[in-house]
Amino acid sequence: MSEHGFEAEDLAKRFGRTAALDGVDLAVARGRVLGLLGPNGAGKTTMIRILATLLRPDRGRARVAGFDVVRRPAQVRERIALSGQHTSVDEELTGLANLVMIGQLLDLPRRHAVRRAGELLARFGLEDAATRPVAGYSGGMRRRLDLAASLVGRPEVLFLDEPSVGLDPGKREELWQMIRGLAADGVTVLLTTQYLEEADALADAITVIDHGRVIAAGTPADLKRQVGGHTIAVRLDDPADTEPAAAIMAAVAGRAPERSTRHELVVPVAGAGELFEVTARFRDRAIGVTELSLRLPGLDEVFRALTGSSAPSSTGPVSGPALAPAPDPTTDPATATDPATDSAKATR
Amino acid sequence: MTATVHAPRRPRTRLPGWLRHSLVLARRSLVKTRRNPGPVINGVVTPALFLVIFLSLFGRPVAGSTAGYMQYLLPGVLVMGAGLAGMVSTGTSINLDLKNGVTDRFRSLPISRLAPLLGSVLADIVRYLLAVAVLFGIGVAFGFRVHGGPVAACAAAGLAVLFGFCLSWVTVFVGVLVRDANAVLALGFFAFLPLQLGTSFAAPVDTLPGWLRAWAGVNPVTHVMDACRALLNGTPPGDAGTTALIWCAALFLVFCPLAVRAYARRQ
Image 1 (tube, one colour):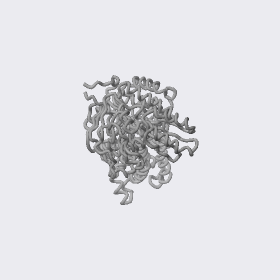
Image 2 (cartoon, helix red, strand yellow; image 1 turned 60 degrees about the vertical axis):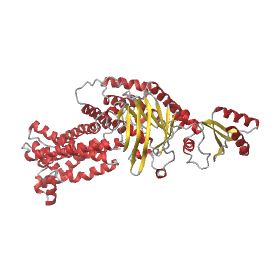
Image 3 (cartoon, helix red, strand yellow; image 1 turned 90 degrees about the vertical axis):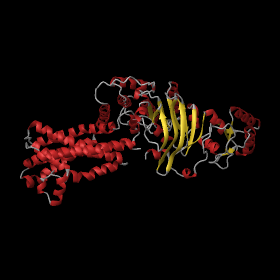
Image 4 (cartoon, rainbow over the protein chains, first blue to last red; image 1 turned 45 degrees about the vertical axis):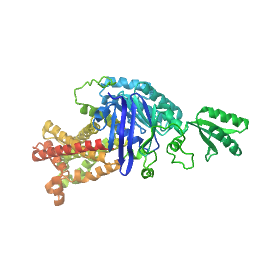
């Protein structure tokens, strides 16, 4: 029995002239959550589709729950479930009918399928909507039903393709709780996302990909250390205070803040300590602020820190303990200009 | 060796998995039909209109009387009803499914790649039966008489439905290959005229003009219509019956594997 929930070695897939995946290695232990982080078009959806046996790779090997995805797809399919950014439930059927149908396709006798559907509808707070057609569901309800549909067969490995796209913050937190619950039950999860915040909240390990290549891999703590952890963002009451405020932030953070177009000063810091220091010094100098926040870096900042290439004016890669480096961390200029996105590839 | 965490699987029936799963998916398709009966109604109304129009236009000139022409025309209308349902709705619904995420769900389940396609086609059989039954009822109400007995009548209806089933695999194949549901529809309508009317539908093949006679002679729909007409009018279907069955088998054996292959490979 493999100790990996899934593992991929040198996976490559081209669509026409676009390399969606260009030699990706990926692995996660059973019962862990791997966050696959990257922008649109990075190859995240292609990765999930290969692991879920929906696409054949051009090169490389992948095993899911110990079975090769190309040679033993039937065994893989018995152990996985897929929940996509495009909900994969039938709009015209009711929530209950969707889940019962999947139960029956998984060879549960009808009575068991109905009982399992009832359990899942209750778990995801959809009992009241059970007998209504999905077409009338809200986005959050659909996403929950989609996740419920993925759990009918009690999968060992669950693929979640950008599960929180289009959800409002409250619903997103709810979804995260459910995903954490699954991981606690021992399900191996591959989660793709464009948000470091989401990967940080859910994943035991994060792999960052761009243009079909791994550019960093490690624990969320490693990654945050490398990209500068948190960011302090400040918007001032009075733009005249910009210079002294920037000087304070530079003194505390050890680097000059960036100035965004909306008069925002942004600087990466190690943690909350710097925020308290900045607020204290602002108070002493009577600098008023409209907004003041401590946040995780966005994908832009992550990429800037990891590749040093997407923002020439920035200070470049932050020093810190290196993550397992990818063979070639720079982006490939041949693919960098290709505007194709994951969703465009998925429909090809 | 592998610790499976699946619920106990105890299939109640002895049917093979691919058929059991196809039936589950056929049920889904029928539930959807109940919510959106448009295509089924269309599948009945179009042939019924052809029946009325041809009967009133050509009844006298072709057969000498409307009643006599009814005996000739109705079997062709039944075949048209079954064929039309297969040509238009199946391919379109499969094509729409493919665009929806639900196909990804089906393809990631441990079920045969045949099941989603066969499920859709099996549900359509219910639609052909409905179309054939309604059209037959209309015919009888307007004076059609079965001369071949109940067994022959059932055989004729069965042949029409079988042909609809086999022909629908062509549209399933197209539906899986083509990106646009409208293209599937357009193709269905484009094929409708030559396939359904370029036959012995309105008049016997040997009375048709030369170019049309040549086409109608090789058109499989002609043979199916001739065989149904013979069965309902109490004469042996003969060569037409054999040719019709061979065509059914050929359409199924060629296009069903092609469709399943295209479905499994579609990315």
